[in-house]
Image 1 (cartoon, one colour):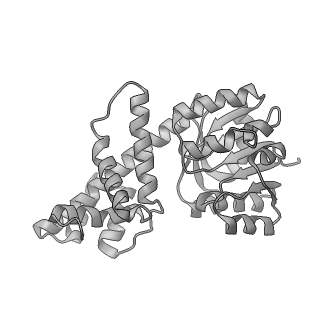
Image 2 (cartoon, helix red, strand yellow):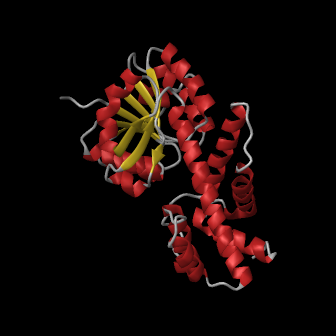
Image 3 (cartoon, helix red, strand yellow):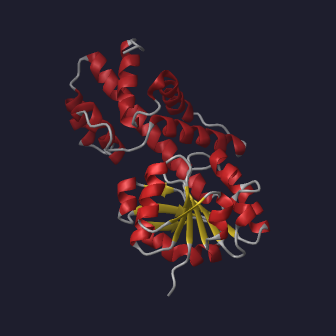
Length: 299
């Protein structure tokens, strides 16, 4: 069978890895430059077609994929005379793979539907290395028939592909997931800080905690840096973590509620980003919490 034509917007670390996987699988690709010129050039060298606007991407594609950093970025590429909605084909499917606000997602979904196409949210779990091998976790949501029409493509990108319900459910689950993960990460980072202040060996603390039910992948990511000096086992920046936890807080408020737990992780991540550490990996929150526990914020 002929493979559907795919348009891809957002060739950052994750997006470029996904594009590479799609090219490996033989999909015809149309791309556009956003911030990562080198990644676009690499895709074109492998056979992708480059166009100048999101409207042109949509006009050339049966499936339009976006892998952007914020809801504002997605909205800017979706709307306007040069946006995806202006060029989307009837019965095409648009998929947001980024981590966006559910309210924004549902609003865009209505606009895409009015243009005669369908919209899915499908945020991602795992890393760009998993994306290269088609091993992502994909948390999709939206119209069941639209999901079924693109599921074979999603299966080429992901090892675990979920359909979680109505549009916005994927982004809701992803934000809950990241809130929990970043709360664990910051708790573990502060635990190492307290160990330093109290004169306890970090490895000894980890060995005790890891021997019980507290052990998790996130604990191990933080320990890889705190004990072995390896910061990038979790390839997720502090600024992106702050954005996602901030989106979780916004989502809670959009649902008419408040969160008691979010403020610790959000405050720490936001403070670390504000002092210039936003581009560092989340594991380096260990340094931030150690400095605070010692009372030396300039450390």
